[in-house]
Length: 147
Image 1: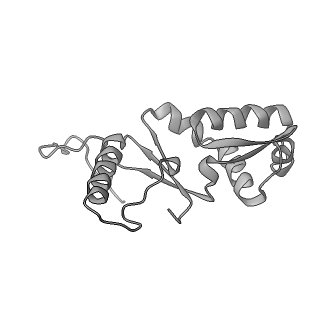
Image 2: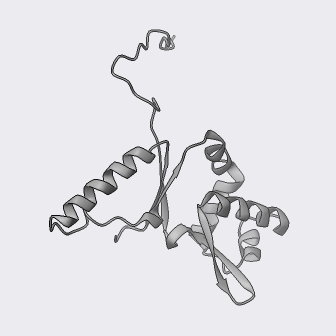
């Protein structure tokens, strides 16, 4: 996979599973190329709104941005990049690690934060309705007027 984009999705586990099965079948049939390649390191699916809430906090997004933009060599350097207290940044980095968004590369005494799998950017996707149905009645949800 040449595109190092971490794709973060919400409630799309079944779609990812189906796509992986289809890629496997095509590969077994002898097909090759980028349409077959998929690196699981670059897909992260959340199933809970609380995980999305945790990720989308402004302080976490700014920290992710600093990691991508500045490539800090340590947690301390990440704290300096966002001009925040080390303990707070350490806690946020551990939170992002527990979500699977970042990982640490051990460099002796330092831990260098980086996006999962060494990704260089993030593509975030959330689709509504979460569980589409053919006979869904949307009349209970009137559109807001534009007055």
